[in-house]
Length: 534
Image (cartoon, rainbow, N blue to C red; front, side):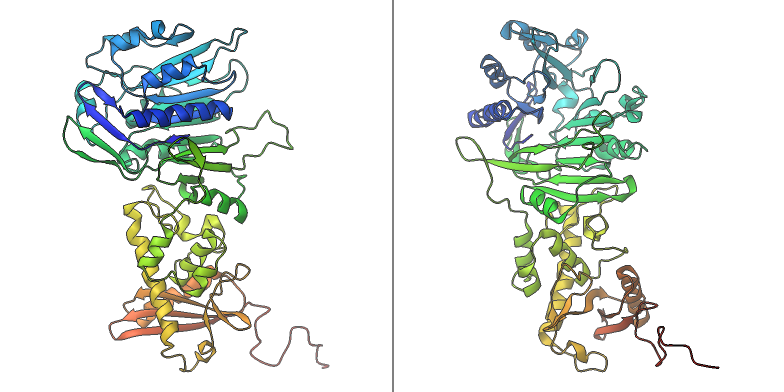
């Protein structure tokens, strides 16, 4: 899976990336897909240079029998389409002739490349043309695109099969393709969405995701692939300017069998695949790092109906490898920055003990979330329940450990500012000699994965919960917030300290939580004491 970056040239003749260095990187991607025996290889809209693809096919770099490559190709004219059979004599080229007669100057194709399942295993190249023009950043498509009239569903003949549907960017704006395939959401389906999209989270572009994922079936998965951050464009010979800043390349899965072990989540995170949960749609989302990367990963199919019961498990992405271009080839990255270190440094949090001591990014999310009072669910520390890991219909990302989108940045900065204030409170120890707060005098902020709800520690270990929640209108309002926090943290004996800001300064609401049976009794009577004689 290639998430490229480059200079895209946009004019009335088409949309292309003509840089020779880009073509070299793309050819290396195809060679890697061939070498690694990729079952599915994909690249985004307007990515694949035609000269490079033709050279690759002459080198026999196409997919093996049973495999499928879906390549978003650079724009092509009707005249060029008509000569493809001559230029690729060993390949069967399939396309809709009617599209070549449409008004406009160029077509935007996705190439579906696979082998004939018959004995000759001939390479087949199916051209699917974009049906809806894009107009977000430039009018070129609106004015000059020849629109396609059909899409293709890849499936097996007879019996149970997974449907594979390819969308090209703004094809998603027109939802009629969903109603034209009434069986689409009642059978296992994988949607591959190829984009060159400056605003992939815009409600109009994401509406199809919301519609697809609201279905009852959990055998639906979406793979959305965009160009990397840093992609620039030159429109009609104007100045070079940013074209894509927030790619939102992502995998959406409704599987209820995901492997959410700490080790798996951390491995995926280090490889540039970040965990989120969309509860409203009962969907887990894995969002990719924004940089130019070539991803390799193992992923089970959306349906396991014909697999052995012992192995039929949709456990999510695993063995993820993110490769960077080193000048000669795609090489596995030793370290992928996730923007966390920069954010912590800006908030002056990079040197405080708990943050420097945590073992995983998910543990860091837990500590920051609790310390800022962002806890709203019982079993809050489970990845699917962590407030920062949850997304809504707007798909804004609010994790502190992978905040690559500007819409989520204010939420993250507010959280980090709250944690900074809490840290300052412990540094100053102001008010720690007040009645009920003496326990804090020798305590500090800390984190223990075995006691994630207790972030105040002394030399014996975790002893209490502390949070700074920002401005409150009154003491009563602050105490209500403390009670909400206590409720979400669950039962057990626990001291809770919630600091908040009033017009008169910072104050602290204190409370103690007791479990109904194991809490400290209010009298000397004991549940296990023998009954008194009458």
